[in-house]
Length: 214
Image (cartoon, rainbow, N blue to C red; front, side):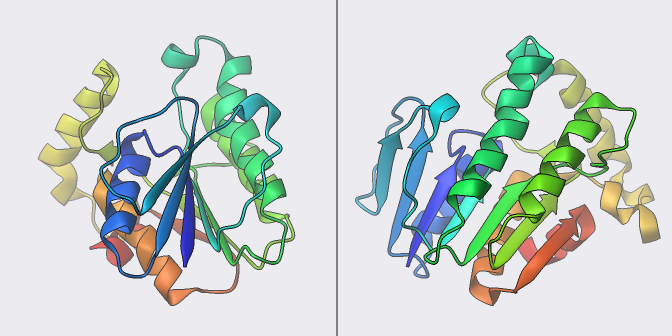
């Protein structure tokens, strides 16, 4: 069994790479990157790709798109769209072949193509296109604020994490979906979904992800 991860150097992607590498469910894990990263396992295969001109062949049964940036890092909304919208959509197009059983893409809690928030609008637009692709199983994950250590500094996000960890117990009932969620929990949920192999076009919000990945 083979998995493909796009965005393996990010917060969720790096945890997912570790989880899949340790899992007996997968025999091989391929990762697509802009530049190499050190790996210690022969189970992991690296492929350097040009994400702006994607024309690769996917030969994995399970495909995970974990790409994500910020407007601070991307600098312009045009560049932001190329990462958070274009890449998941292009990968979905490449997944339209018999070998692919499941495509999972990371979105965001609150994603809505009609939102006045540019970020949530972008995520909602991405979801709509991805879900309409001809793939047996397309799963959109909508985590809330991600908890975990990042390489780059995000001051606003750090403050959000602090208050989320301090006051998370207040989010109960329908508000549970807004609790912060560990990136490792999201990664565990992605492996769980591969093993369960549900069929259809599905969206899981943060509280459901928490249950699957705990």
